[in-house]
Image 1: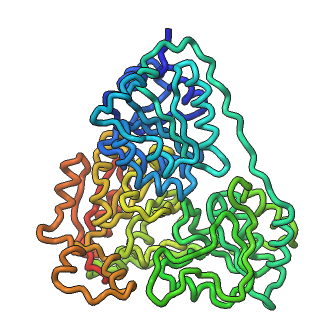
Image 2: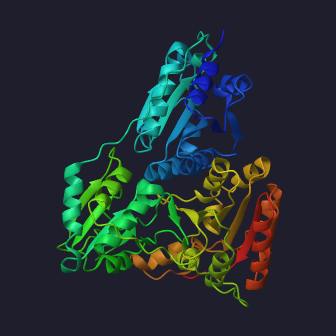
Length: 519
């Protein structure tokens, strides 16, 4: 007679959720044991819950379907919340399985008892606690359906230990019926009228969500070609398809003054899967809303609406004009000093076709978009929610979602320390991931923000909180200790040699790219 845990895993794989990023504890041991009974579920051990949730995010972005996580009680879920925040902002389909105390044990207020539901609701679109083992099949189907959307979302199922170990009977997994998003014909017509204004009233189309890759971005390019509108995307898209032969899309700048310059003069802004742009933070004396005065904003598709279908319908209303694709262009390989700029040129010159780039390079990545724009076609994953520590785990998930495609993780030193344990999972799973770690021994982005918020110039004590030296972090030693081969590059020539070798060999590799801070 199968127990609840066996039925749970059977239900997940029946719904095509067959990868689980796990950091289990006592309450989840029956789930762990049941993995031997359901070999179709691939379980991947992560040494920290933030790695598990970040990996599930990277997997969902590339696979277009959910992975699940296995987390231990409230503290385990809490440890994973930062990357669940990023996944929520990316609209990633993701299912959390969070073990809980047995129902009869909860009233005893044991040391690990907490309000898991309250924690889950901060990031989850759907949350439920299962009380009877016989309900698990239906609850799993609902969880997966909620995660798949559209749009993608986080579903969290709380699994009491006694529900997991109880006999459940042989359950027939409930089918997960795909839901199609709706399209507003009125919104399509209004967007068409706005974009037809052309030169008399300059317009821009701002893309987000699934509009930044696949059929959505191609339809958007046809619209831009037919109308002459600007084609922009959110500052931190979940997955941006780019490179030679693909539609060029301009990312909205991070700094408010730069974004205002990009949007200056725009009189009609059409949002396709994107939110109205605002600054990341409030700054004294600066406006937070980035839409220019006098600009009319229209939403083509949002929420449960199908942005790809909406863009295709909008494109069909214009005369067919072939968009101009991004031309192939590689930077010249630099020599001499290794800086963020010369490192970007090396990456642009050597980036492999069909690569998946996971970008958490922060300030060191300033030159990367320009240096890689004409590289062979690739996908670019970014830090959607702004919570540090996403890059290395997301690279793990992306590599598992797309075996056979090279993954390049561009990582900053400060944010790498949030989830460095992801390197161990890369080594254990033998994933083809090259990590370029920009090592400037500084929280450089915070040096920039210190000035931007109008704070007094940083003195010695303030500087201590933004400095990552004394002692210097030995990323080569740390990577090797976690099972990943690593070397340091201090010149452009060294970086060029190491990156070429890493990209040409299977398995994980880390390059400590010693660069000076920009700020």
